[in-house]
Image (cartoon, rainbow, N blue to C red; front, side):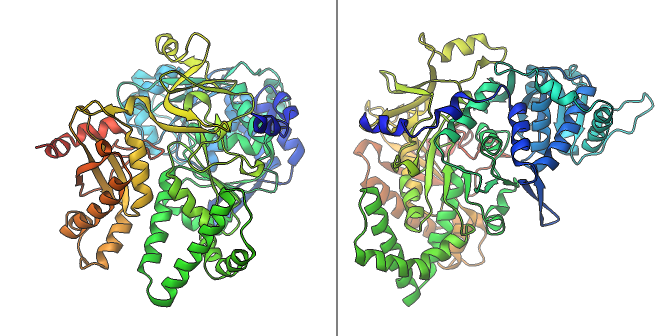
Length: 620
């Protein structure tokens, strides 16, 4: 506990306790402080555009005034259905400055669920990315009587039919109308910001449940402000940093990454195209980035396969350099300084190999933050060998994401843990192992669901996360599994599937997704999908050149390959946890098919139901 006291002394409590009344006020203050400094960067025709804080304010205020001119009042809900892009940020900041409450909608959400979310939230306005998103609204317009106006980023605006309908307008139309109002009354947005308080509703995010209707977590202005202030108070980031933001802004993790630049003042490069991440890292050259484990697993897999394909002296050099990197990493983990001999070797290894790997990520990364799901510690350590630190954090939609985080700059970091609670947040473990959370970032409840709200708070006001975890001797939290995902074999033994799945992803660079199955069965089985790029490359080098992805995945060669990795996995498991049989699908799981969440997490119940016959066949 002495360690905790020492670290608490290094928290800037003035930042935490002096947080402002609203996100709009925080944005206004950031503009006053940073003015002409870079705020955002985004790609336009493959060219990186730079926008200052003052330029951002001009557009945001015009859009906010436009919303007010349409009748938006404090706490009116405004939905955003779009991929991550600069216009998403402008829309969200305009909502914050006009006093509204952003309601996020994943662009992949089916039309029926879009209609439910917007109706349940009582949204009066919707920002829709393109004609596809607008069409979802049109097909269910009779279910959206509260929606006054739809503002589209790229879609076609209504020009008025025979009835003069102008339900859909463009972002430019809204901005122009707002600018006209500002020209007549320049203080109107600032006056509105002054009316917004910390207890006002600011955000509704609907949880992407695997069954039933999603529930909307209501988060206040202060919940968002607290996250920004808490992370700044531990001085993890500074104004010289540059963030690359690609995560879905409809996800709570993305929303936290959006409030941090307002709080700290660093610029953010934004582009939500997942297939462009590696390419853009080299162009943007960020100092940090938030991501989900799947991104790190894919990067690890591709580089590991590249190294594996090398031969001769070049392969020996790479293996030697990674071995030296591992010696340095292990010494750092023990809190020791590597020997002088190892340090000299490391300088050479870094120059010849390790620095070249880091260049693939832009060459300036201080650290990555991994969240949304459990990251395999071996994957994190592999990145550590090459000098790329991945720190894990933990939180849920209902706790505004940034509940717990590692703090390596304060010596507070352990591989496999998600760190220490953010200052001002209390985390404890219930008798059954469930992680409980209380703090300013916790939601005020589920929208229109007092029954569901009552179920997730205990008598002391702690939020029941549904995650199983443990706190070690130094206060580090480790998440072991989702409470509802634990299953018991017919022999009465409990199995934590996500731990096994995470462990396998650290062993096998070719796996894309894994699902461990075995509820009430006498042994555990698994379903695999393989990374298309990785396994196609492997196939080309192993007698399967020219074969399709489906043919490669169903080949005897791949069966033998996967069996080898399963044997490695089983060697580190208890007997009752070991995978006895498995099936490899001939296609990958996707977000569009409903098998993965937009943050690339496995929808376990959906996958089990969809591939029930294949899983049942493993017990016949």
